[in-house]
Image 1 (cartoon, helix red, strand yellow):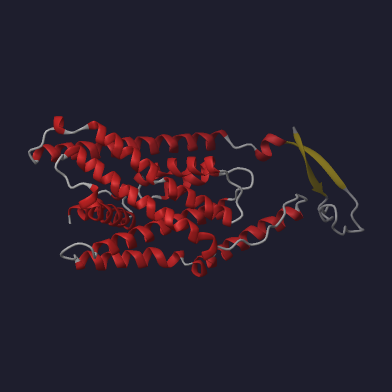
Image 2 (spheres, helix red, strand yellow; image 1 turned 180 degrees about the horizontal axis):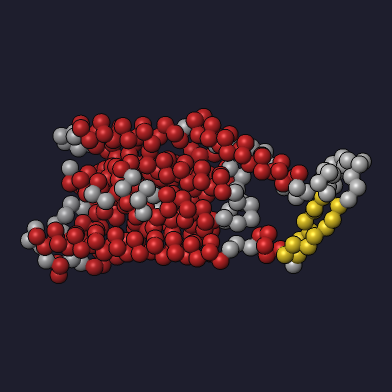
Length: 321
């Protein structure tokens, strides 16, 4: 396939697209065939860079997983426990519960995307959401954004709103988790006031940016860039409709918040099942669920705030506090 490139003489203005007023003194225009592959096809070097980045993420995840498991086994044996006392069926149950606990977060992310005018399916959203978790093991966690945005892109999906939705979903999940864990601390005796204050600080720090009035300022900035692109496409003769600006509101987002709470409760149950796999006498959900939920919520949020890969080291400190 070939495209047509407009080449004008040095003393004449370029040919304007249909629907625009043309210059009456326009005298000479030459059409030159340009291979379409040179206009739109990505270069081979770019493809190889993307493949290498994917391979790098996979290697980092494998290395981090191996390191964490090896260190855990070593500490487990140093405390006088044996590997043969671990019950694998409880580990499988823990993994299954945790996998399901992430579903409400993925659906909440889709709710945000739809509110921003993005045309995404449930399957494509959840696929990008779950795979994006692998990026948490890369320093800075920017890989989470790159993985999700790359996997969900397609017709009717724009990069700017997708990135904004990723940040909004993440901050909302962290805010609700830290607030839930902090509230549950009041059911413990004695109340760990130091951790309560830390939890309230994390709730405020992650929750304030998610207030629709605050977050819509960011959307307004993104909207300006989007309108400029649409206007430029119109000048170039391309048809690109400028959609009405989408805004996040409490009415659109509030129905998804209970799902985030349920997701954190399931994460607490996952921690209980994992603990039960190693320690048969561990407290069950009836007597220890409050502690399990508080531990998993506050440790995950603290790991997120630390910006360390996978929250390494930070989560362990919070869990043992």
